[in-house]
Every structure is written in C-alpha cells, then in structure tokens.
Length: 321
Image 1 (cartoon, rainbow, N blue to C red):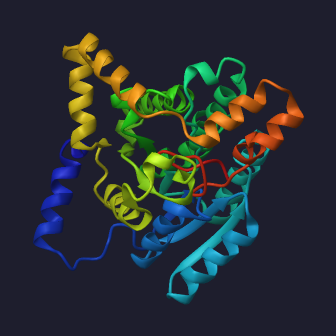
Image 2 (image 1 turned 180 degrees about the vertical axis):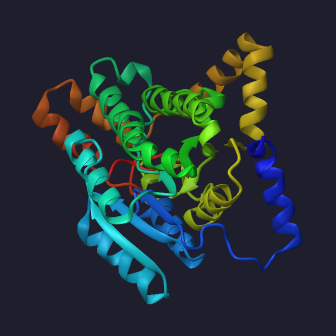
C-alpha cells in the first residue's frame, strides 16, 4: 500500500520541507548517455543533490570530462565506458558495477538514437529499425534486467526511462524511433507491476523536443524545445518523486484524440506530415542508400550511424553511447 501515495506524499513533503535533503543524497545513480546532452546535465544535477553518479557512455574521454566537472563542483562520480549495443559489454558492466557498488539505487536509461525519416525513404533501410531497436529497447532492457535482482533484494529501486511524447502522438516520420520507444514504454509498465511488491518502481518520461546538438539535422527544430538543463531538472524530479509517467499536455491530448477519434487523428497527422518534409540529412542519406554503400557514406548515412547521445539526428532523446 505504501507505493499508492508515493508521488502525492513526495509533493507534500517538497512543499512542507523545501530545504530538506534530496532522496538522492547518499544513493547510487547510474545514468546512461552521460557524456553529453540530457545525460550529462542529469548527472551534474544528481551529483549536486548528493548522489554518487555512475557515468556510462561509449566515449571514455568525454566521461572523464564530465566526471572532472562533477568532482570540481564537490560531487562524486565514477565513469564506465561501455557500448550499450554490445550485449557482452553490458553484462560485464553490470558485473563490475554490482561488485564495486553492491546495488544501483536509481537507473536513468537515457542513451538512445532518434531517426526522423519518411516511410518512402525507408523501404531499403531496414537497418534504421535494427539500430534504433538495439539502443532504444534491447540495450536498456538488458541493463535493467541485470540490475533489477539487486534492487529487488534490497527492496528499493527506481528506473527512469527517457522516452518521447511521440509514443502517445504516433508522430509521422518516426516509425523506427517511436516503435522502439513504445516497446520500452510498455515493457517498463509491465515490469513495474511485477516489481511493485519489492518497492522497485519505473517512470516513463515522455519528453517533447529537447534542444541538443542531435536536433541539428532537422531544420524545423531550430531553436525549439527545452534545454538539456531544463530536461534534466525534470528527470531529477522524477527520480525523487517516482511518478509512473511524466507527460506533456499536448501528448495527453494527442493520446485521447487517438482513442476517441482515430480517423480524425490520422487525417490531422497526415496533413502535418505533408506540411513538414524530411530534413536534408534524412533525404540525402536515403538517396545515397539507393546507389550503394560508397554513396551512402558520401551522402551522410555514415554520419548518422555512429553518433553519440546528445549530439545528432534526435527528436527528444539521445542516441547510443
């Protein structure tokens, strides 16, 4: 029964004791995609509240930079370079983290990849589906499964997934991306019901647009959305209050419209789809795909194959680290 009023109690406690220590103080918090963007900003914010941050990303040099910033500000952090799409590397990371820290109290599944590309440019690009699924769904599920037994054994744990309002809106041009994010959204809701009795909870954060370098290839996104720091403040709030979901009003409206008037919703989104075309990066990469691997690299597919979280063709999320 204790979890039924977890979030309302947290809100009351925040209002009555605004200067009280954060629930993150003294806790171990693992953040993936921590070398830039939302992940970096979240790591800095968690450390400022007294949490020990485990920084996970592919780029060891950038992780060391973030760790140095945390420590210069009086915080505590440990860096772990890991390619999260490598299953063996994830298993090794879990083993090392558990051996060194005993258990992870909070997990932020932030690393991810977004691809914005129309279906007609995707017919010969099934690898778009494969790579978004690998980092947006399979990687966080594998990492979470590795850390869950220790959370359940200590009877405390919380997992925050950085998702997108698109899982509610069903936004055109994001079929590969939102398919993978919707899978994680559903998996986590089910997992949370199974771990409820162990005081292990999940929050699905359905962000709208966030300004990171990853939005740069989509011209229509220029100057739009929250900053990474604003997004990180909401992530920290979710870590502390442990809500089931964090939505936007627009996402909620879109979800209701999809339920009560699905054909009207289809018509409206079709018009929206036609009004906002593909970015030059998406169109160029897809055009290159038709003329072979060498042309793909020249046209830009190579660029969107290996980019770090917080840096490139992203809608509200971060790509694999």
